[in-house]
Length: 318
Image 1 (tube, helix red, strand yellow):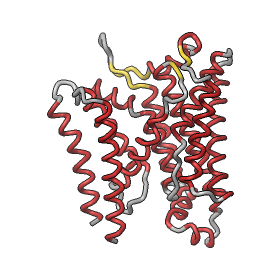
Image 2 (cartoon, rainbow, N blue to C red):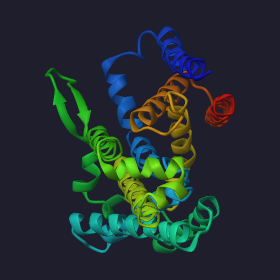
Image 3 (tube, rainbow, N blue to C red):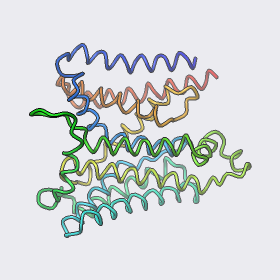
């Protein structure tokens, strides 16, 4: 059953790429479009791989989208007030860290179910984003070129009149992915998180500091949400209190898609990244085919449903 699940998921992901390759032969598999996809999915990749940190324990964080929005508007408001770019970025990251710690306290210390706790903080952080921004989009001269130019630049690959550019956003996403992969797969910290996900009671009896580790895991996810929010604001050279809302749903979808590729059915960073790429390819291909955005939302929802169903069936078959 596990082999069939993994095979079906892999064939499905490769089938999506093949479909668009055949349907859009002149544009889809070009180096320029692939680099474009890498930039488009960079924010989602950061959200998804850092969300993997809490999901390995069997927890959820539904507040990451509103936290990303809050971090973006905090930075923009600081920019508008004349703060230097490094100070504004540090303030936004501090907001993400604080939001993650609040989630961690609610879940690991107070004992509220993650779904309930982060659903509540989703509303809180969203409201805070509206309060900080005054409910408006911050753009124009308020956003310094040093910040917005980051998303428009990168490492130049080759020469010519239109050289290919590896975007800094893509590089940032890869760097975050590498850090989280090392943390989860190569350290005792990551092994303890997986132990909590396997059996929290047994992990506690074995001496694992479950409360502290869950707290720090939510903190990592909060910082990841803030980084994604800053990346998004840089890319669109503006910030508004709702711009990160769609990241939570697609982030969860990416993690669940990745889980169908792993032998254990557990979240893994590289598998999550494969899920992110699949969703990015799907969105890019459908956009090129001029498919309505609402149809794309329906497809993402169906993908989440299918991934969860496959994971549930494989666990039942063990």
